[in-house]
Image (cartoon, rainbow, N blue to C red; front, side, top):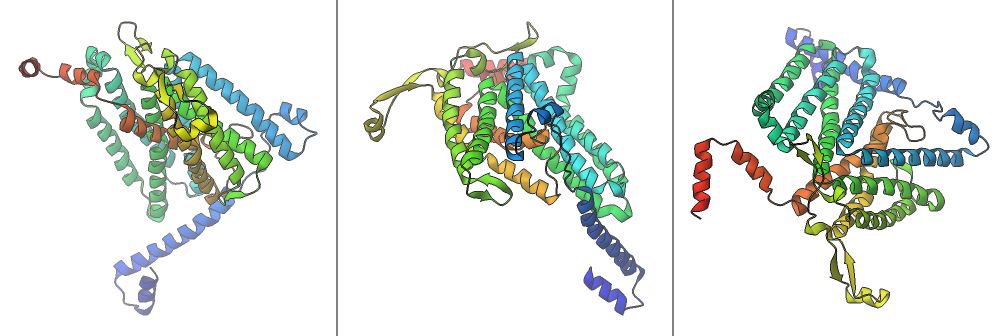
Length: 431
């Protein structure tokens, strides 16, 4: 752009195309500088206290440090109690909660973008953002319905047609949104509009894709949903506790309050917690059985014969450890061994989701994504590590746990024509 401006200045007879480009370059230059200044103005953190008045009065005699500790602690216990309640209500409620969390996280991130650039009055930005959220959810949840509700889909003619052409419909919906975006482009705001287009799509990748994986993990068995989420929660709590009482050494510049003492203490506490929680949950069929849809009762069922992964087995203890504890063998569930991998990831890699969110908030000079939960910020502030964990669990199950699924094979078999089914039958009979 600098070379173009110099050329236009030194060449008064420059062609109209160059003059037009030079004019657009100036507009873009102003836009870039203006956007930074407007980010400064729009996203300055507010100092408003969102703590409930009841807690403010009860904790008025405490210092701000201890007041924050009690507020976070009380509301953390409330959120844990709510988590227990939705687990008790069953998988369907859990799926609905995941959907609500996804929508709220998307809203918080998109709102930041809108607040930063709202003064430019970009046409259709929020409308298109929510439209793309609808399209992506339609695609992912349509795939889920086809996979896990196959019999129901085949039984209902409208659902069968929608399932057959699901991907074509999804692509058509997305293509409509893409064309709407192109038609909404305004000459003076090209760059900003493409910024926001990318903003929306990255948000969809982070939020919607991960929530879809959370639901897939849930269908493998509630234990694959509860243990990873609980490990992240435990690590968050214990890292805060260790850091609050023993923290001295800063961990990372993105989060100045994080300390090495909290990071290491949280790691050990999370691994122990994961082992204990896995031992307790592995003994209950309602947690270890895959979530399946019962066509006779039109409801979800979690009843099965537990796999070897959830049967107590005896393991020999290495000689070095035998000399320390005096045990030669130990009885434990194989899933507990996998829980070590899950809890280790939750405590060592999971926090990087929080560091990523901290960097994002620092880039836009905001303290929290929202003020939904006093002392904790927005929903996205609480789930920044959970999304990273969801991807790991899904990959872990696909790589080390899940084997060939006979029910999927039967589903594919039933979609074939009678002559194709007969051909497969004869082939298997002659083996």
